Length: 293
Image (cartoon, rainbow, N blue to C red; front, side, top):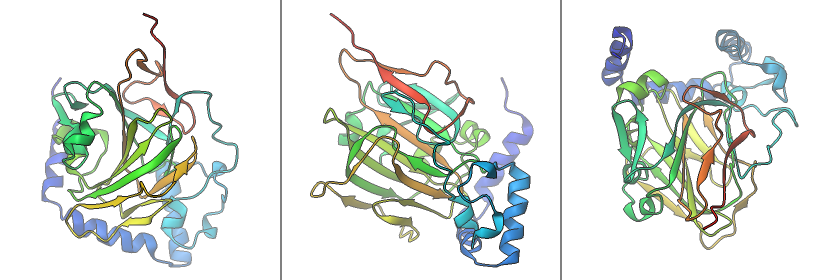
């Protein structure tokens, strides 16, 4: 199936846009405490994107001092119960792609894939843990809740900020930009699971995404020094429970998760999950079955 002309033009235009400058400007605007002007911007955004404020812990748009406070708003307690599952959905959004990691490569869209090594900032030793493993790529649209939670319990081992481009991460761009998620700026969070194996959750930046933050570090970017930055946590016991908040986007983006292969315990994704499927935080994402020899 050919790509529509309008979609091709939209993707081509992104190559020409000053994406870093636009993102820096958006970050300034989102953090501005502009009183009634900020409230008007928030009300416009709610109407434009159909944001469901009935689920927000604070439903009054005027209660938010800046756009960032609104965008990273908390939910009311109990509106996202956790399923009884080995892996639960970490975000509100939609499925971009999911499946097996084949020969170290992750499927992006028809005609496009990228390597786990590239996604992880060139760390081939870490990527080797996921050969034959599994991935899930989840897209957060502007209307969605933008805090990220833990799909399973984990102990934090490392965090790496990988510099990169700032293309949009919407479905059209995923179809049109090769290696998109391994090209964009990203924050790689490496955890140790209950079985002692590593698993990874990657926060992928995008155009207008002013910054990304984690609960243990705070704001990761800016700054954007243009070089890879790494933090090690093996000398600490930073442990997060399944469903606990682990980070947030200041404006929307994508998360990519990598899970290792386990001999005799294949991972099965929720059969209702297909590319484009709307998903909600806490629902069943995947589980492993035991194969009896």
